[in-house]
Each structure stands twice: as structure tokens, then as C-alpha cells.
Length: 293
Length: 290
Image (cartoon, rainbow over all chains, first blue to last red; front, side, top):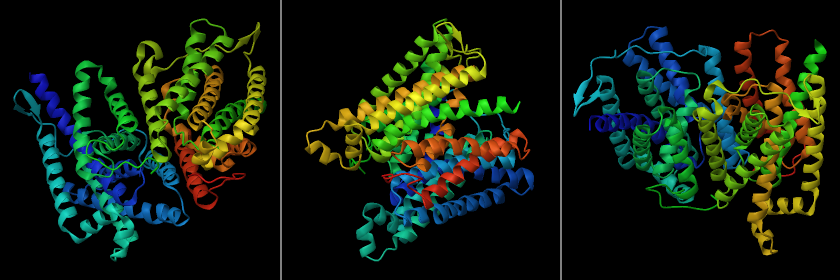
């Protein structure tokens, strides 16, 4: 029974991190309607920026984190404004944009190796302390911090999307771009803001990931696959779905290694992704499914 | 010294030509956004390597690589027959992740991340292709035969039907053509030749590990197919030569190898983005990427 609670807890922690990545990705997808794989690259590069600010320049951790989040949002802006927008202007299909996003991801990962070296980096902020015991499961203060931050973020995001003018405009563009334009919403502006906000959430993810794990140049690929899988399980482009899907993924991975060798953890995500893409494209919460979309 | 280097380049280019013209069959001619080609390359390489290491002859290992890659290509194609566009792209990409995870984790067979060392060089009817010069002739002739076969297929009525289905599936169906079967066949052909390339690659390098078959390896392939122009075999060959040789020039700049690798990847990614923007149809492409 102790193992059960420990795996449950580990699953929730992993799921919270995936959910941060998946929700940023889903915000971008919901309005822009193409797969921004380079989202993982934004997380990885931001994690290095945090490392550079905190361990390199020796800034205060909270200031470093805020700067990192701002950097991530700015990076999202750059990527949209100088790569995706011109490509769209030339009439690029979503497949072209998907291929472009893979190219950006590889570019960013190689840049990380070039700038920071291939070795792993660690951020020593919250030291590993004796964990608390809940039903026999051990949870560290850092992990509580991760879960609490995620929950606060998800509620803020929910209110932002429901109540704020920008959030409502984003939902309008997501629902029907043409109708939104008729009522006077500038869709290009909304596309850009989705990138900035989605990428800033990637920056938050970067901060929490670098507290929990080592920073590696190619971590972006692994993270976006997890985030993307979470988004697909929940229903792609649906933010609450992305959060739910990511929690399911985190739990599936952690309970999976009860039965399988731990090396298969990643394989579980791949298999789930594959199965959902093949058999339930609309995910758990999604309803719309257009065959050739 | 310089000769050995040139032989190495010819072998590398020939293997990549087989790999990229085979991707062109599914990606270009049939318009199936196949991002899982590296997986078929890997399946071919592992099948061939494992059989050679168990003492089977090269002919058997080579044929098995072709067959296994084709088999998985067929299965993937049947499973994804309802998907198109982005979703097909992502599912095939997902397939390459699953393949990679299996290669890494199925340690009792694939030896996991440590890879398979000591893969023997081919021996065909008692002739041993042990030195690189002899191996070069084997690979170049395989590339020529592959080109010839794929050219025959794609310029046949069947090939034209692939193009027609890519441009307008409904129109092909209304002429009574079985487009699903056609797509599966083109996917299988594409995968088979990737398996062939994998078999030759494994025997040339004599050591394979899963890291050769990650999606980083996909970027140069996509680059070649798009620069060459979708549905153009001569363009693809030209593009392969250019894309494989450009990074070789970097070697002469005298950068340390730790810097060379990332710079090469960044160069590939930048060229790919530039091509998508300035020249989305590549050299000889007649169709757009839908």
C-alpha cells in the first residue's frame, strides 16, 4: 500500500510538470491550429537561461525566475514573428509549419550544446531535505512547491481564459477565427499573444523542471513529447483536457513501472501517444474531429 | 588518405540516396507525410545486424532487413489508413519514438544503448566485401538498382496513380481506384528500401546503436526530400549529394568535433527553414507540401 501512495504521488508530480508544458502548448495550438513542437526547445533554452542567471551571474532565485519567464515569452514572440508568421504569409500549410517547428527544436537543442556544453547542469536552490511522509509516501518540500505552483497557475489560467478580454478573444479565435474577425478581433494579434503567453508558461515549466531534474541540452524533445502526449490524451487544443491528459500520463508512467522495468517509462508515453493518435484522435475531452484537418 | 576519405563519402552519399529516394516514394509521390522513415532505417539496420551476428549469410540478412522494414511499413500504413496531413505526420513520428524506445529497452536482443559491435562486412557468393573500395562498389550498385526500380515504379501507370491520389483522392476513387491499397503499397515500398539502406549502413559502420535512429536523423532526410523537390528523383539525388557534402566542408575549417556536431545540426535546421520560406518546391519539385 505504501508503494501505491508513493507511485500515486510521483505520478501527480510528473503529471503537473507535463501539464505545464501541455497547457502552454495547447494555448498556442488552440488559436494557431498547428503543432509547435519547438515548444520543448523553449523550455530547454529557458532552463539554461535560468541556470546562467542564477548560477552564472549569481542573481536572486526569484528575480532569475521572473527574468526566465519573461525571456521564454519573448522567445515565443521571436519564433512567431520571425519564423511562423512569414511562413504563414507565404501560404505554408500546417504540415510545413510542423516541419519548421521540428527544425526550430533541433536548432535550439544544438544551440544549447554549443553555448552551454553537452554535460548536465544542476540548479541548487531548494536543497534536498528530509521529505514529509503522507500515508507512507515521501514528498519533499520541493515537490510540494511544484504541485502548489502548478495548481495556482492552472486556476489563474482558467480565470484568465474565462474573464479577461484577451483570454476571451483567444477563445473566440480558437472557436471560429472567421467569426471572431467579423466582430473585430485581430486574429494575428491573438496568434502572437498566444505564443507569448504559451511560451511564458513554458518558462514557468522550465523553472520547475530545472529544480526537479538536471538540465540537459536535448531535454526539450523529451519534454515536448510528454506535453504533446498529455495534450493529445486530453484532446488537442483543449487546455483543461491537456491538464487532465498530462496527469493521466504521469500516473500511467509511474504505475507502469510497477510492472515493467523503469527503462520503459518513456516507452509508455510513446505507446499512449501512438494509441490515442490512432484510435481516439479527439482525446478524452475533445469532441470535434475533422478527418483531413 | 584522401582516397579513403573520398570512398567514405561515396558510400555515405549512396546509402543516403537509397534512404532519401525511398522516402520520396511515400512523402513526395504519394503525399503521405511520413516522419517515421528513420524507424524503418533502424529496423532494417538492426534486423540485418542481428542476423549477421547470428551467423546468417549477408543475402539472408539483407533480404530480411528489406522484408521486416516493409512488414512494419505495411502494418503502420494499415493502422494509419484513416489519417492524413498533420495527424499522419505525428503518428508516424510517434512510431519512430516507439521504435527507438524498443531498441533502447529490449536489452536481451538489441543490447540496449550499448549497441551492437562487430557487425561483419558482407560476403556474397564467397566474395568478401571487407575493404572499403569493394564495399563502395556494392553500395553504389545497390543505389543504382534502387534508383532504377523506384524510377520504374514511379513512372509507371501505378506511379501516376500515386500522384493523382495525392492531388485529389476523391477523383481517383471516383475512377474506381482503390486508393487505400495504393497508399499502403507505396508505404511498403518506401519502408522496404529504407530497410535496404539500414542493412548496408549497419554493415558499413559495423557498429550500430539506437542513437543513430533518433529523430535528429530525420532533419537531413526531410531537408533532402524538400530541397530536391517533392516527387522528383533526380532532384533528390542532387540534394543528397549537396546536403551530405556541405557539412563535410566544415571539417576543413578546423573546428573541434564537439562544436562541429551542433553546428552541423544548426546549419541543417537553418537551411530547412530557409528552403521552406524561399523555395518550398525545392530544385525540381512540381507539387506543394500539403
